[in-house]
Image (cartoon, rainbow, N blue to C red; front, side, top):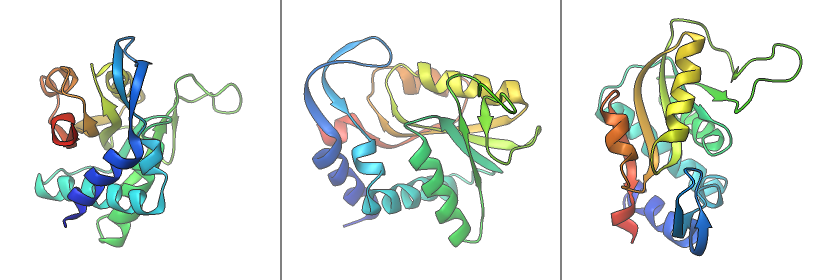
Length: 179
């Protein structure tokens, strides 16, 4: 079984929940993907790093940094940074805060980042793309050049299409592959 197939099975087993949910977009849904129940496991972290890095390699994405909106992307960017280092092609991680830090630097962006660097923005789940676009906006406002967007899971509700109008968009898994 491939790493991607293993990751798909973990997401299905650990992260897919049924019930009545309100999503970050405000939409109501009878299912929810709690990706952290997969990305924060040892096996899930390893598979996420490998699968994201495989997309980066296969599509020849050149980037200095990988980051996204806290909290869903935090374990993803850490896993990818680790795998990229082990593969000899390091991509450093950063995190986008929802609000600026209330003390010290008062930054929206956390990590060893510099203006002008290239960045991949990631998200754990894309529905409408709203949270992903916010992360992109903060990264670009900081002075980063966004070269691609990668989602762990595309719910296939229009967000991927909206993102791909402006950025190369990739997803590791699509909802239709699990449900």
